[in-house]
Image 1 (cartoon, rainbow, N blue to C red):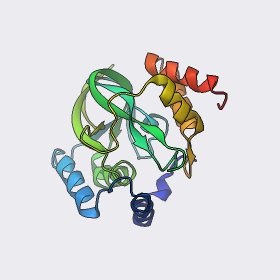
Image 2: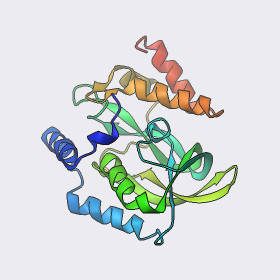
Image 3: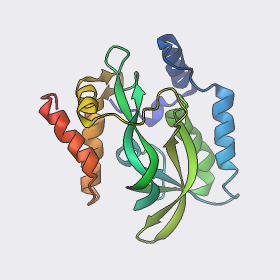
Image 4: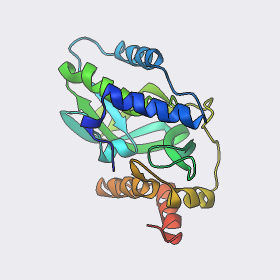
Length: 222
């Protein structure tokens, strides 16, 4: 099942950290590191100013945050890519999968969400509990082009220096892992299917993602 807003409590984060440490594959971010990361991003928001968030994966179809407006957007300089290993969430140590991130180069279509000024601190804190447990992402301010002009938005870029990062995985290998992986938050194939479907609803397509979904279907598990 997808993560829900009410799930994102400090206790939920602590339990996720314990699972990661028990697995032993990598060391998650500590509370202080996560708080410092959030503070650096919030320092870029002026008092009384709304803030935008750019979603390119599950944040498109399960944004979870309270927002006042959403728009399709195009981000240059990064591409959507399965580029890091996952052993929790929608996978397990026994059945690992790959996670979706933004990697350098190309462009990416997604959705931007405007968070009202008075809700920015709280909504961003929830967002950090969701996205910034493992440390595989680097939050960044980026410029996103929308039908109503450019907006400055926060998004999550993969950390190429993280232990989980993988530069290149063949589509066939990625499909085998995605087709089989499941965890407490559902299956990896469901995540991929939802992302492809949401892009289609928005009138977009991602050739690499669609091809990967076709390969997962050929595995006979979707």
